[in-house]
Amino acid sequence: MMFGLDAELIDGEEFGFNIIHYLIQDKYKEEIIRELDLLNINESTLFPYLENSAKYISNKFRKI
Image (cartoon, rainbow, N blue to C red; front, side, top):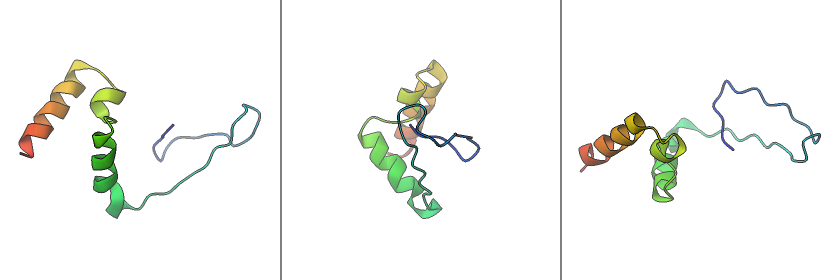
């Protein structure tokens, strides 16, 4: 699972799993987003609404 900066997660083993926090430097953001997209993990697949799919397709063709 991935969460943004404002997420409040309770650490503990009461739910049967551990939570590990990673801070990712800004300079790696674009590369990580690109690599996740290669694995078909993107805004369009995480939030499969028509507007997100349209935005994703529009951005893909804008870069070509």
